[in-house]
Image (cartoon, rainbow, N blue to C red):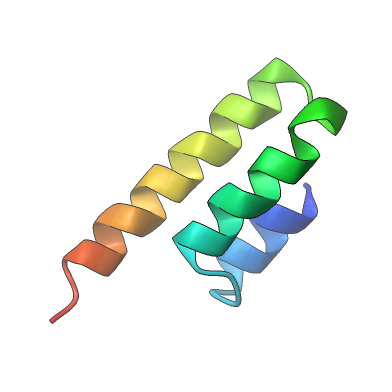
Length: 52
């Protein structure tokens, strides 16, 4: 698990911060994991948009 995934799971990282971090780490991650991270970020963004 990468740092982005760990911090998202702990809810210590906002989706925007996660997207920024992914941009910085993209070269170090394989394509499969990038897809996983993007899916987790999309889910976190949906969760944030449903909050009042």
